Image (tube, rainbow over all chains, first blue to last red; front, side):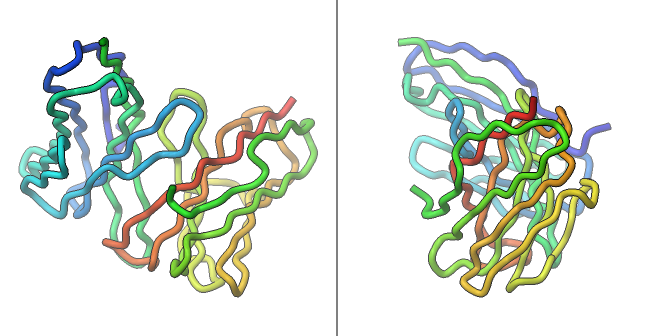
Length: 112
Length: 114
């Protein structure tokens, strides 16, 4: 079983839709939960992160973590064609080494 | 722009050869991590350097080695290249090596092994 599971998609939505992207994880020791956006053939770009359970809003992006069910979500409001990219969830295995454990990524296409 | 720069951006090597990839960390960051991203997969942690010392290693063989310099820039070396080493190699920097330090990635170096 992978430590982080993510539906690879692709997910296609119309412009303006609310997008929900999700991951599940197995390691209860994860404390920080990152979301990265990766455009084709580019490096991952940090979108937002949360610490432990709860919500965090960053502009049109809201990250949510439910540690009891080991479920991570990213919501994108008013989606734009420029949001078309791969979205990677990445819990951090804490301790002396801040190592990220990535899901496979979900490919999102926002249709104009 | 994250301020993390990598070189070269693309390169092609032959199986059995050796390759060196380079990374300059963001100003003020003393920690550099390297990740390998195969096509269609998420990045996988190779190792991390904190203040010139290795500070954690992923499940990669010893032919993957690294170095961090006093200015916190870093190199990734891969010996005896195999076809499966073809991937995007990502460098990431952070202001520290411990938990909670935000990690920023460069644009990566595309390695093709033929």
